[in-house]
Image: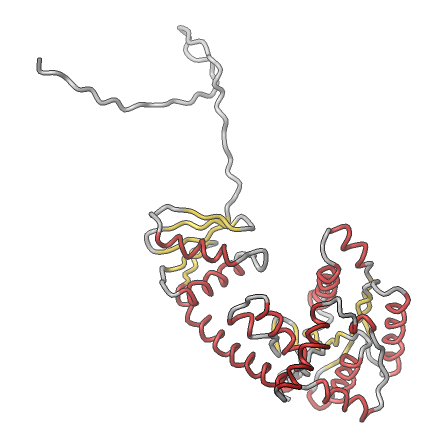
Length: 344
C-alpha cells in the first residue's frame, strides 16, 4: 500500500469509534506497523449523543486497546448541549468536536497523522451527495487518500473487503444503530441509493470512485494553472484579470483560503469577484472575514480590511479673538469657485 510506504518513523493515531471499519483499520495498521516502521496509537471521541450506548462504545474501545497494547487518547463532549448553545446542527457540532480533538493531538505532537476508516462506499456517497447539491469539479473529487494531517488507508477497499477482513481475523466490534436511521441523508444514500445503483449497474460504487479520482486529477491540474494568476504583495494578494471562470474561480478560492476564509463563502461571492474585472478602476466588493476586493490597474487586489481610526471634528463654534484660536482641533475646508466675467 503506497500510503504506508511514506509513514516510516511517523506516529499514526487511528480514529476508532468501535465500529467494524475502524476496528479493522486499527488491527490492519497494528499488523503493518513493524514492517513499515511507524508507531501506533488510537483516539476515541465520545459525543454523548446516544446515552449509554455511547458509553458502551467507549468502554469497548478502552478494553480493545488494552488487549492490543495500543495507547489510547479519549475525548468526551456533550454534543447535544453544545449544539443547542451554538445554535447549529448536531451533525456539525459532532464533526467540529472530532476535528478539534484530532487537531489537539497534532498540535501537542502526540501524532503526525490521524488515520480514518473511510472506504470506497464513503467515497461514492460523498461524490453523489456533492453532485446532488450542485457541486462542480472540486466537489466531485470526493475524499482524498491524504489531506492535511489525515490519511485514509482503506479508501480503495470496498465494504465487502473490510467485512471479509473482519471475518478472517475474527474481530469483534460495536454496531451503531443510528447508522441505519433513514432520517440522515447519508444513510439514505448508503442504504437505498447505492444498493439500487449496484442493482441497475454492477460495480457502480467502484466506478463512481474512479470518476472521483479522475476529477481529482483534472481539478488539481486546473488549480496548478490558476496559481499562475496570483501574486502576493505583502499581506495582500493580486489576482490578474482572466476571462476563463474555471481558472479565475480557483485562483479566488486559493486566495480566500490563504486569507483565512475556508467556509461561509458562496458562488455569489465568486461571481462578484469575477464581475469586478469589468467595472471601473477602484470598484470594490466585500466578502466575509473582512476581506475587501478592489479593482486596480493590473488586477483584483484582495486585502483584509482593518479598523480605521477616525477623528470626529468638533463642529461647535469657537470664538476667534485677538489672542487667536482657543487651541482646539479644527477642520479646514476649501472650495474652488469658477468666476465668469461679462464683456458688457
